[in-house]
Amino acid sequence: MNQDHILIVDDEPDIRNLISDILADEGYSVATAANGEEACQQLNIKQPNLILLDIWMPDIDGISLMKNWNEQKLVSAPIVMMSGHGTVETAVEATRLGAKDFIEKPLSLAKLLQTVSDTLLQSEQILDDSNNDLVIPVVEPIGNSEAINDIKRTLDRIYKTKNHIMIEGENGTGKYSIALLIHQKRHAQNHPCILMDAQTIDNNFEEKIMHSNGCFMRAASGTLIINNIECLTIEQQNILLSVLKHKQFTVIGQNTVQAINFQIVAISKSRLNSQIAKGEFLADLYQLLAEVKLDLPSLQQRQEDIPELINYFVNTLPDTEQTPYRKMSFAAQNRLRNHSWKNNIQELKNTVRQLLLLGGEGEISLDEVDILLSQSTEVIEIPSNNWYDLPLREAREAFERDYLIHQLKAVDGRVGELAKVAGMERTHLYRKLRALNINPKDIIKP
Image (cartoon, rainbow, N blue to C red):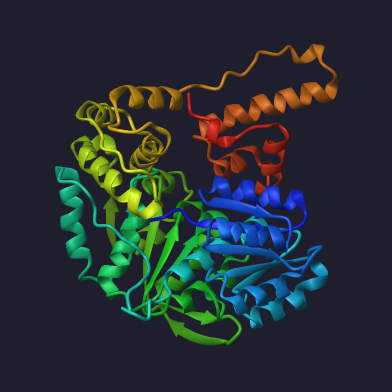
């Protein structure tokens, strides 16, 4: 799937930079603009998949700018308004005029990420009037190894069922793509598919899922994909367990009872059996969600599929992302085949993209691959400081930097996991990382 491109339009540089850092860390492509004029310039450079638009700006207000864009048909992307405390009514009015949603300032990280994720997913589900097909490219599993053929056979049986599915596997193994594939094969593209990321849910979980405009109602007769299911708190797990046991829920805001008439595809990057043993995940909930279990293999378990995956990326990335086309030598392919891919398919795809974009002309050589792989395994060195010889403020900053880099390595550079370890709210953590000049993407596990 293409990387979603988000345009942030806000006249406050701190807010622009904060949102940009957060969304970039979540894997989005990001552009920023300080006013309406810069926003229009960015639209000419690259059309976004989503626009985050502040209401009050120095040259033009966000609502007027949105109206101008709509009248001139300059954008087709959904627009989410950002409003301060005193402009919520204005933001609500903006949704009546065409904005998809609004986010209130000061920003809640959980609300921001959930709104972005939901809005993008809803946008992807819009039907193309010309052929009535979903605008979501979904690919069958690639390869012919024994491990991936087992997955294909299991999927063929799953498509015929209406069971809830639990998909487990390491980072980058294609869990989300498989979840979308299951939805499309089951529903022939005629029913909704709603994504809920458990890692970004705040304390309003019950309202999030059971409100009249919540995930359950929006997923009716279709599929609800719950990503990072292992991140649900025990309290949230009990709420979900209760409604799944009774196969119905009370709609908040309507006080009516609605049957569970959709399938859940739960995704976990960890093996939940270990969390169940520790009392961190409810065994009863796991059994209800895992009516059918799918364990996706790592690339280490299917190395013979790597050449076919490489060939797929080499041939499709030029079409989907406008990268240059370059053939890859057999020696280069063999080097990639025998490399240890910590983040599996996603890391392999990123490496191929880098080789296509940043290399020279002609065939991709073994030397190019060796240089790129050696750069990706460089470890950031932390200087050894004698903190006791420093002023208190400098000593504290040196310790914080050392501590955060150490913990980032331990969690493979994942800021969400670091927030749990450090006991910090993620918005504050992002500010701290930026203040200490720490880029999570530069951090790798030792």
